[in-house]
Length: 268
Image (cartoon, one colour):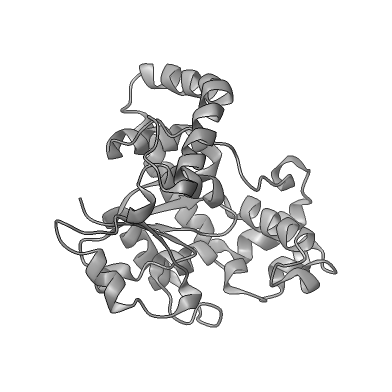
């Protein structure tokens, strides 16, 4: 199987999915890397290549550029409704003193934060990362950028996990990939989506992130079409998974995490 790269887009349930992924592979097969570290080193490319590749999974805050040097690479990605993502981004930046936008976010309303242009993450950040935009914070995003992101999503991913349908999309992906049951404990869960939102602020976020909105609409439409082919038993499978994940799943997750930290093999 081709090497996998998880493009961790901030505030899309990526931290939870990150943990799930690291429990599917032995620690020696996993590399954590971020765009901030610069161009891909040649030794990493070599370790991801060939039938005896040492690295099977790379994950981190990464843009989709790996396929430019490794044509067979496949991506995994989590996507989220842009309004919920920006709300969560603002909430997290305000609360976390170590966040690079903390000082600005703590004095800004959500609407001002969305309009601030402080980071490419706040202006169609999902499209930027999927399209592999080089000048991440400064480059303009347009319809051609969206088209590139959609092409990557359709042809270079094994599928995406949607925050709105997390368990459903996770189980569907897990089945296709042949993974162990993807037990998890939610990580870094915000409260933003549970609070009422002023319609004017919603409109501002949607306008600033109009290309992300279209990307998410297409991803959700694709998932709904796939969901329709899974049959009536899939809903029962999801219900059973949710029930077990609260008890058995939590115990297995913690055991897997302990094994990961010491480099041991994982329990099934």
